[in-house]
Image 1 (cartoon, rainbow, N blue to C red):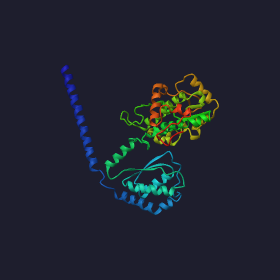
Image 2 (cartoon, rainbow, N blue to C red; image 1 turned 180 degrees about the vertical axis):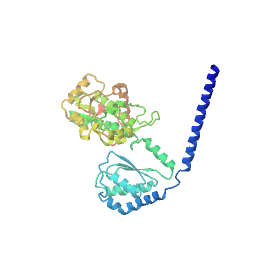
Image 3 (cartoon, rainbow, N blue to C red; image 1 turned 90 degrees about the vertical axis):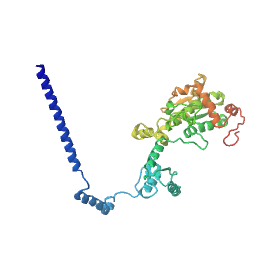
Image 4 (cartoon, helix red, strand yellow; image 1 turned 45 degrees about the vertical axis):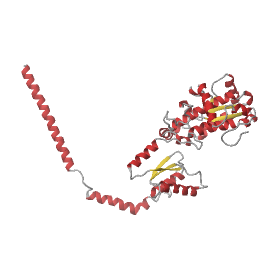
Length: 380
């Protein structure tokens, strides 16, 4: 019985293997047949039909497109960044110009960068008096060189770090250093006109920020720069500096210092954020505040009569951070990192160093003394 069972099993396995071989042969034969019947060119009917479409479009395009306006009216495109290849001549040139005039940030990706810059000068001259200056830049891209294409994409995706003419990372200067310098230098007038307020428009994005006081320009190589890193760290630095400034101002000075979150607002700031964040702005417009809605919390902070009392209450309770007003015009607590008093004082000292003010600038200005700043003329 065992011998018969083994024979049956052997016969069955041979049968299945031969069946698989037959299937492989049939598949191979089918593939060879398909290869032999592959198209070598268009059939004559397809060729004639193709030329019919070409001739038809040439003869009747003006009629079929007669309902279109020329030039094509475009909506406001302030939120868009458009990369236009071949934009120094022909259709590409016209597309780039019209997109820029509609408010888009246009990147002319071209081989001849000199010609592109000359075009920009011409367009800016012709556009003078008709609106804001055109927002156009030039990047080199040679479509006849795949290496050039790869370099362009790499440069575009890398979000290159930008510095101000003073040598500071742009986010850090615009969002923190410049407002800090302005606030300190205006203290004599603010004290004379007290009660006064310094209201800094901050952001909920400071909650994901981190400040390295030894690398505020993010150029030491310790961290890889991104626009998100630059933006969030600058907003956190502003909260920390504002907190120390408020603590250093005596109550009799009558100057309140606070930060405000306008919410997530539909503004041009999104241009400098990562592409993913920019995409979110367009995908979820219902959840994004308009500029008018975003202005509410700042207007509240600047005008509500109870703000000075609230700020003084925080100071008397030795609260580690300045007042922070949220997008809904209610007081809220800044990030946990903003409560780090040690880091905040380091940010204070480093900021004064970067903006060229002495460490005792606030105290001396309140006392009516003169101080010197490395920027501008002597301050009185």
